Length: 506
Image (tube, rainbow, N blue to C red; front, side):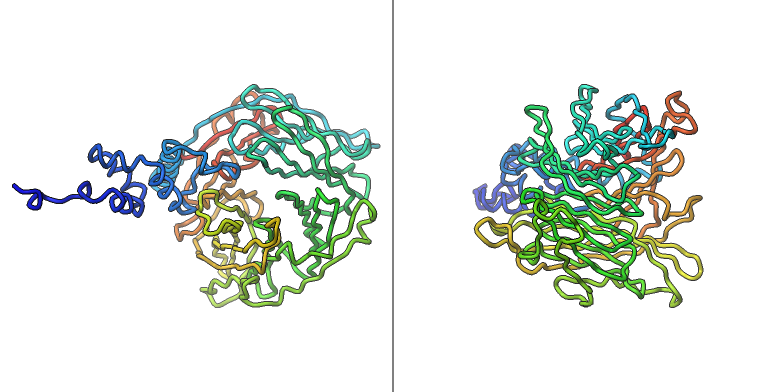
């Protein structure tokens, strides 16, 4: 039989063409193809192919790649492992049934501190609010009055934040970001004393090599009836005051601040991502709006807080957000199925710039994914979970590549799912959203799991928390979901004495 008469298969293709075929296959198909023969395995295991497969993963299959992971530093084996685990996790959530199971990965016992009212003899033990750092080796938490960093590997406390003032010692909210390839931790905090009309926003810089942290910025801010939301991204710290519908944005490196005011708006969520401020708010007709404000549009509007410490004198930019479906404004309008009155409420918001997405331009800061979850109730008392996926892009310009032109918002998907009746009002639960579009909430001994961007009844499953009858957990000290690490979907379940890192659906 001549060579021309031989049966042709993929392995007979030129290497470049064979590699191109593999690059366009689904990750599952690549895994199956590499098992067919040595030649296919050789091509499938190449770094270029694995990188291409990794970059094709959708957010619903978000791999465990931290913001400081660089794809050019990952080997082909590491990429293949991350792809396989991401696909396996996605399939498991879809196929494992209602009960998602529970797997504990680490635990940490902590002696709780007692928190005091200054000037008052009353005292109580405050609940910890832990956050797991990407990578799972460290956790930040508030213990009593103190903000503390703990090592889960060694079960030791490695750092305690020094309060900005002797009378402002109570840390009541914080956020963080890892920079410089995960070598440096930037922490933004708000301190109060419960008896004063002023609060302090502080920024700390913790170096993992030296195991030392220092305060690099502090500034007074007005008090708020509700604890304001706080977020840090790079050199920017955003403080959202919900009752006042006002944002204070700090550049902690330059010691500058600017106020953003948007009147007559309620139920607002906001964050900083991809050189933009992104705000979700409820309009008068119960529709939701997403607004993006480029940081570069605030040039010339900042106030130096070292020279002007009185926040009432800082420059203020006012917005009306009256636009309709422009590049920087999107109105989220899922049709009202009943035709009657509808009531909506924002449950949660999450944004991140996928580290595995390909960069089309060297000066492109990347495409940011924005997830919005909302609650809807109709006149007949039926309840729904609304989920929206939005993408934000902006072209970085300038020598430092920090200024960004007009933002470009696009609605990728919007879904409505029936929300089953629960014994507790859904609005009373705390929700955390992950990079894979999974949302968690705890009620009783269970952690409920919600799947965004689908039409299945919600929640789609649950996982039971073991150890309720453990002596550590009494009726007043019941374990509860405190936070979810969005990259790995690891859930932190804590009490005043015990902190657990767990995973559901494993």
